[in-house]
Structure formats: C-alpha cells, structure tokens
Image 1 (cartoon, rainbow, N blue to C red):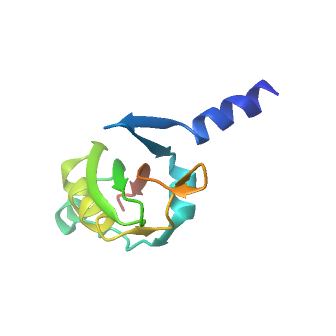
Image 2: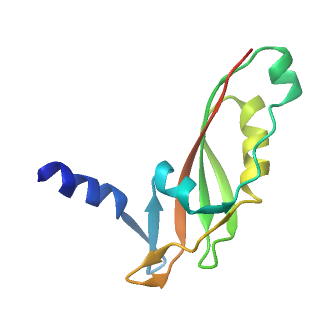
Length: 115
C-alpha cells in the first residue's frame, strides 16, 4: 500500500510558479502523452567519434500540448544539441490538473549507443 501511495505522489507531483500549478511529468508518462515526436538525429561527429550515452531534458509544455522551452539536465553536448532541436517540435496531449489543461514540465531521456 505504501508503494502505491509513493508512486501516486511521484506521478502527480506539481510545482507552483507564478501562482499556477505546473504538472511534473516523469519520462514514461511523457513518452505516452507525446503525439508528435520527431526523433533526434545522431550527431554525425558524435557518431564518427563513437560518443554515446544518455541525454536527459526537461520540456516545458503549455496548456495546448506545445513545447515552449527545452532545458538540458544532463548529457554530452554533442548529443544534447540534436535532442533539444527535436524535442522543440514535439506535441503532447495536454496534461491536466483537476480535469483542466495545465502547463507541465516533462522529463525525457534519450540513449545513444556508439557503434
């Protein structure tokens, strides 16, 4: 029972900015809500140098589901540039708070495998 309650707290976490609640969306829910998600390109220089790894970004999403800003949380700069560029073109099903569309911050993780 405690695990379920903790999960609910993580899934339904909110931040308050300028008097408005902003829904914090973890990666699994963010990917499920994405209705348009162009994939980031593997930077040709990073690919040639066999640079791989994970890039984590936070996408600010408005009430309509459009991405308004993308911030890199972690990851190699060669890889994160293409992630930011791609995520700016993503579109989400609007996130809701108390049944009404609400701004959100969606955390997204991308993994690049060097070959």
